[in-house]
Length: 246
Image 1 (tube, one colour):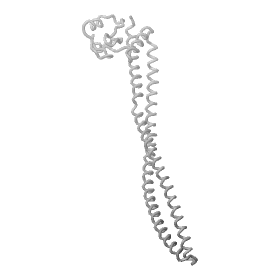
Image 2 (cartoon, helix red, strand yellow; image 1 turned 120 degrees about the vertical axis):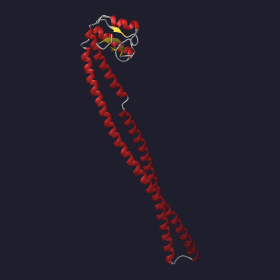
Image 3 (tube, helix red, strand yellow; image 1 turned 180 degrees about the vertical axis):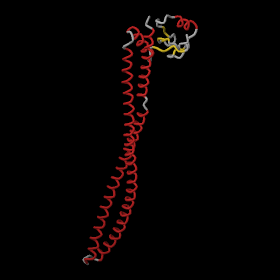
Image 4 (cartoon, helix red, strand yellow; image 1 turned 135 degrees about the vertical axis):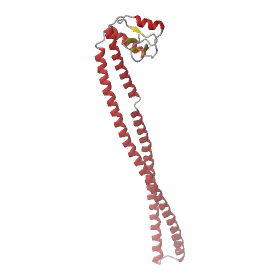
């Protein structure tokens, strides 16, 4: 293919824009801010589960304490009735003995229940501390996630702005390249998954970084400036410049 030497030079600008766009695409895929958001989300899920468990523990302890306090109230009421019966003087000696035995049993039962209530109150205090710690951690995780999302969104906005800028510049450059040469470039770029042209710098293809030797170097040196030459290794269009070392 024949193409004006200066038109071939434009391919280097086109390739530069393609490299910039590829770098932006890679940055978008590997954005560290995404990892930070994911880590914050995972921490939030874990801490949310911790809060739910702690809240459940607190509710269970409250329910158990209420049940025990109801039992204590029942024992006290029964003891009050027994004492009233004793104090009334209407009980027979046998009944009085039975009431006194029952009062002693009720006192022991009340003591056991009150001990259990005290133990539950201690466990409730510890559960409250666990809940407060989990809730504090969850609040911090939510703040971390918000911060991470802001950083991610800012990075994505920067990438989008770069893509828009380089995309517009690429379109502008491509519009100045003759259609046959542009079509060849695009076809090669699709094949390489990158760019379709590279500079020949100091006898080395800047696309594959391999230096030209022997017949390939001689062919590049002797080719007409308007002849489109290709790298035998990566197949890219080799654009000759004053720094090609020919």
